[in-house]
Length: 262
Ligand code: COA
Image 1 (cartoon, rainbow, N blue to C red):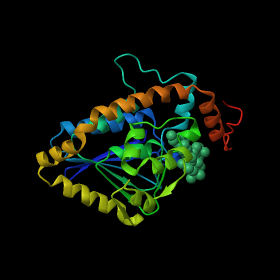
Image 2 (cartoon, protein in one colour):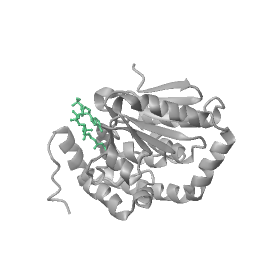
Image 3 (cartoon, rainbow, N blue to C red):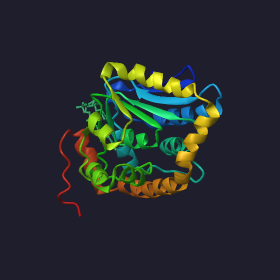
Image 4 (cartoon, rainbow, N blue to C red):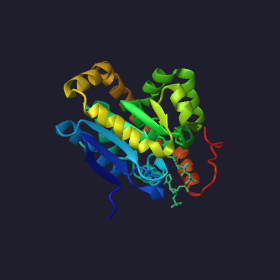
């Protein structure tokens, strides 16, 4: 079976590459698990100084697999006591990673493909990349603490624009909003992002970890609490008529109709 997340180590940089190109790199539990494992490995392995997350093909990721949303709606994403789902592990590990996490967004980023970026220390994007958070359109709420992190990063008005309309924005617009650090020509992104990651990997490691921690540690608990609160609503909405309609509409390739829902 093809690996859906490729893992390589290059000059102190662990590269995690999403590789489910036929489905626009939509994320499955297996893929979340591989990403979560990669982040754990990075913090445990002294040979890894930085993790770089990127993707094969023309998409970064189309977000959570829609089929899994449908399944979860039928049989709720049960999280047994003491057991965490792969997506929860991924979000938690991203929020608590001690070593820098860099993203190179090579194409469309949707849903968690954008909210994950709010936790990354550096985000680079290709000129043709786009960013979209259609949670409301799917009857869902955003996750990963993004309802706290995004308004704080770009302001309430701009965050509401992205969350409530679910509209897609360009890489240039994302850079202007401060969502990403820098935009590169499409064919230069991979090389530039790896070079930047290697430059960070070559820095004094303890100093790098301390600076990251100093910038983020005050936030950790409040972001985790927001993420947990979002998770409660997310799980409830997954079982709602709103999500049922949105997911059916996606697979039937038609617009969702919420006009009868109250
Ligand atoms: N989950 C599962 N499959 C997905 C997917 C997702 N999130 N996103 C895309 N795919 C699949 C499509 O069903 C299609 O599969 P098929 O070839 O078997 O029909 C394939 O990937 C290619 O997608 P397609 O829709 O034909 O490509 P496109 O370029 O026209 O549109 C998107 C790309 C990402 C805009 C569109 O697929 C989309 O809106 N996906 C859903 C994104 C989303 O809402 N994610 C959840 C966010 S919370």
